[in-house]
Image 1 (tube, one colour):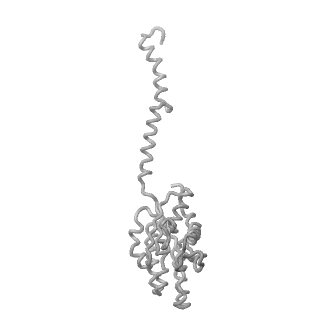
Image 2: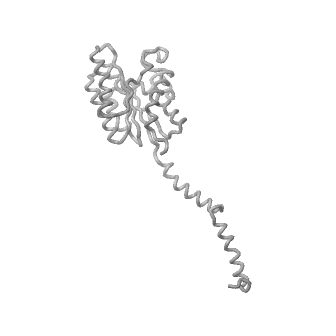
Image 3: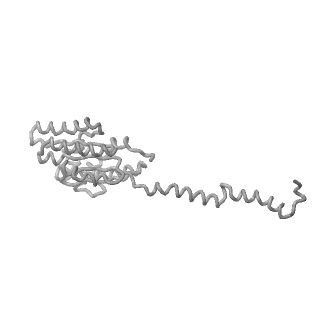
Length: 234
């Protein structure tokens, strides 16, 4: 076709077409706006998704008796998660005075939401009261089984019984935690208060509950077993 013989309006249209195409290209403001809107819509479900949770189910040792809430072990773990770039919400489900039976009774609501990890710290009050070890083991067994049925990773922490109930009770008490860990194949910390129990400088005046320094040591111990089971990429 001879362009020189075209009507003037047609020649103008042919000249304008490349400019229009350029204006609708990927680098145009309109295209960038549209692309950004699509990306925003795609990201919307990510923002609306409930946060993944790590639940600490325990007694006063978990609750942080005698400490400001932010100095409790679960809160220290939350700070470490944030610093390391892990997007998890830590739930402190510690109740002072709770036994293994108490933990079992409130398990369902403690596991509300998108729980991926359950850290179990129970048994100290069973031991202090001299409750039957078989009863404690049965309660902990049920907690672990119900959590695993929901595909929740379980970290079990062991506890020591006071010596006043005799060496047989103490040995049976300690063995219950090891047996549960083996039977359910869970991550196991043999003694929650390892390196803290019995050390005055790491405990409150009652000699039982960790102070801020003690809580930091416990958080460090738990972090070493918790971090390998976490997923940073999701």
